[in-house]
Amino acid sequence: MTARSKGAIQMKKVAILQSNYIPWKGYFDLIAAVDEFILYDDMQYTRRDWRNRNQIKTPQGLKWLTVPVEVKGKYYQSIRDTKIAEGNWAAEHLKALVLNYSRAPYFEEVMSWLAPLYTNEVSSDISSLNLKFIVAICSYLGIDTKISSSSDYELVDGKTERLVGLCLQAGATEYVSGPSAKDYIDPSIFSDKNIELTWFDYNGYAEYPQLWGEFQHGVTILDLLMNCGGSAKKSMRFVK
Image (cartoon, rainbow, N blue to C red; front, side, top):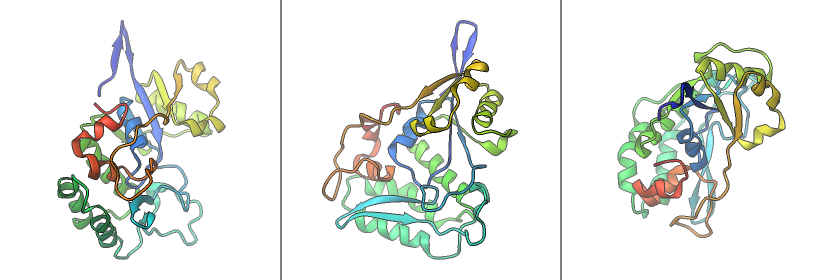
């Protein structure tokens, strides 16, 4: 995706979001909806959140796949400074995917590029690991949005001020935010800098063929890819 021109004005949509481990489909729809997606990995790492874990479906219900990270005594570390702990988690995650998705129609197709992400050299920090998976999934879906990191830019103080600063440095004319940010964003700071603030809507997704009982929207996008392959785009709103 490239920035669009409107008359003499170069239009550019930017989104800023913390990195997640193998995120759900809405995360990738937001990436596809903008021209540049900035991973907000200078933010403080939050425990028991989506940074290092996500869910898959199993015959017994939802199951967490969690990447162990070093958090003891590191209460204020950033996401990009959060190191992955030693352990056999990669093999365990692969085993869980094989056990629960081998019957899915596109299992072999997806695993042909997914498995090497687990078996080749593993990243030392959660931010790099998440980026590796996000980039690979975007490639499979044909999403060509520029993906950058907040560490690529200069940061200023203030929750909204920092977002505005990132947008200005990225050349944004529009900031697309997730709806949960309504609790803390000050829209006036965006309007003062002539940046349009819009809210992304995660509602309205259609169901797709899914293994193991009652349909679940919020699981990792790997569930959608395993079940639908290239036609996964039909179950998304901005991926073409």
